[in-house]
Length: 406
Ligand SMILES: Nc1ncnc2c1ncn2[C@@H]1O[C@H](COP(=O)(O)OP(=O)(O)OP(=O)(O)O)[C@@H](O)[C@H]1O
Ligand SMILES: [Mg+2]
Image (cartoon, rainbow, N blue to C red):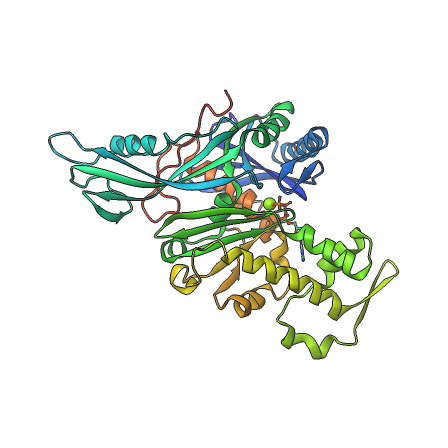
């Protein structure tokens, strides 16, 4: 949005498109002015598969948000996800050549720009270059080296790239309805902004957004991003399992999953549910069978999430465990199942740190939407773009690729 202090965000999900318009107040708080949610079509596993259908869904969602907020959406922060996302780490070093040997913000810029000068194949685009940590004269583990003395500054950066055509299709849909893309943001990074605390990021935590088409994973340690991954399995597969397993039409399976699904560990529920029969639209199924099918898939997803870590010493790597977001984390009993299956703390993350019209956001499915706004407010163009202190999330900078599609 061009209006001063007003920003918009579009989360183009596999099951819903959510556009939000918000005003950033003087203290940096984000006040939501309007929200527009529509079911999405033309998307599969986070990717645009039908431009016209996707465009229509996005248009409808933007129109609703404009109506609700009374603001015209001219540009927006747009979330990106899908299997085409890759991440890797890279190191870079620069010399501090000035006489006083004092690390300045300029040196940070230089070392990051050196870190991002990796060879990116022509079919991929750089999305984010995020510092994981700095070292001054070989001393590692420094969150913010500005003001320190030294001869050399090293950075380890997390580099996220996306498939050019996948991203171009998304940007094309958004542009075709007259909205410019302010910035593209990897969705799990946005969700993390909305639900994680600084302490969790510092100690070690996994953010997992189990949506409709993808499960988006971001692992934080030492106050910074450590690893990101997109898994192509989520709520859609759960519904398909129920439909196939119980011989139900897809929409009936979806309704039953949401209405009666409960994934509390099997031993807790077995006795009470054995004889229950549920009926929806004339289809009768056993409650126990329904829950067993859903639980099996959720257990698999939870195990896939922790497999993103290099070894099984999860308690040391992520003592704060897993924070779940995304619509599928609404499943009753998911926290208990997670704790039981993984022996880690598990909580469901409800978006926070926003004001105004927030009723709709009291749901983990909206973590990405809220996070996109928070991200825009924190790192975007309407504010002075500057990191807020060291433990505040992704700290300093995310390199914005301003000319991504120019
Ligand atoms: N109460 C519920 N119980 C179980 N599943 C639910 C519930 N509410 C929503 N879901 C599931 O959540 C999924 C949608 O989640 P979400 O809105 O986070 O996805 P999305 O953002 O559209 O998709 P994605 O992020 O994967 O592209 C659907 O599969 C839906 O069935
Ligand atoms: Mg989503």
